[in-house]
Image (cartoon, rainbow, N blue to C red; front, side, top):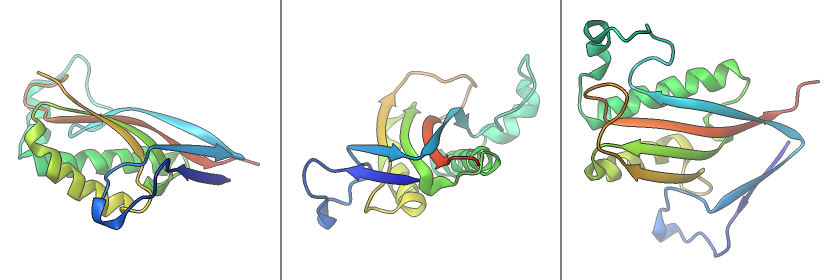
Length: 144
């Protein structure tokens, strides 16, 4: 599988960009993952607010860390890893967490070729007290 970051201008180290412009993939398969958040991907429906409260505790940093943990679980089960993520759509209820998000994202993806991404501020998410939700696309090697 060949993943190629597309940079229409050079990625200068001083930019510490948290995203790349685009990616191309050759010889692999795409994995589209649903919105992951601080609450585990599979949980009770209808929602059990009392049970879910344990996952909704904590500040933006804690919820973001749990969200990336849940993304990793999904990707692991698909035979991919966080370095295979091509595109993220990130929804937050408070844009003030942007620098924390960038710090955590850099730890997982690095600054050389991080995934393409969109960051959107929203008034509310699926669970009361939920601060971040991320969906995206990853690439994995083709199965033989």
